[in-house]
Image (cartoon, rainbow, N blue to C red; front, side, top):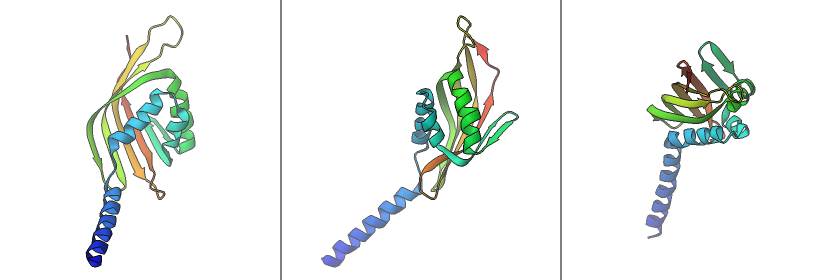
Length: 150
């Protein structure tokens, strides 16, 4: 009886460890990111970035948490609102997760009394699990369509 109980305990422990390391819920990661972005929480967004994160948008390529936080997060966040995504493809494994699809944002008017715009395009977010087991955004690529005035 003790041997059976011990075997069940060992099996349960191994199974729980294996499941925890198999994959992550990519939708949860991206919703955390989008929620922080829409709440204008630049600190939380920056905390979700990997130290070696890359950001690509057209001919722009920024690398490293400091540069991406400053030039993408801090400079772009005040100019847009209502980030929404529509997933086309996603996949996860034990150490990486990606999601790709389309996005839309409300582009705030440059001055009071001027019309706002709508920005749309495609995106790819690649997340990697670090040595500390925390998931961080490692790569973000945006392909914009021309901004449309409302």
